[in-house]
Length: 217
Image (cartoon, rainbow, N blue to C red; front, side, top):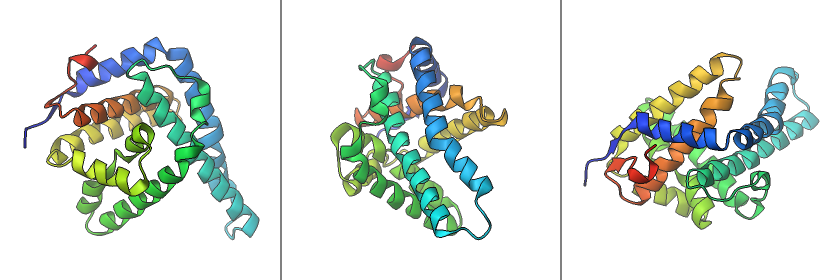
């Protein structure tokens, strides 16, 4: 098994470069995603009564599905942008054909990680890292949920330490972005999403050094 080296600074620098190139478009996509996907769930969380009614539970479920649907579109757009592929705002919502696979994979991933976290935390982190790339297989190859999760498991084999360090950097940057009422996430979340997409592409290409020259600023 070759040793993998993820050089985070140039990886983020390239992502920032792509962000700057498409700044107005990315900003618009982010605002749309936040306004339609995240804010309704935040509102429901704070204003749902202590004893929720059937109606409020239905509304909460719909809001969660909308967020996940937009999350798939957002991931797709960031994935396309790193390779300068043509994108449009409609790519945020034209993913109905692959949404079922995504939602099934999402819940399988969520419950696997949740169970792992109950087992002394470390198994949850391990599963989160090994299975994290399932959305890209669904977007790229329209794989089924199980196939996407299985491929993510295989492509990350042997690279857990490097991917944990990368994931910790992503979490730290987004935490810093969230400190100022979440406004900083408009900058950090697209950048870290693009960086994650680059890591996926490089793992698929069996690169030993990430980023390779293709993704150097």
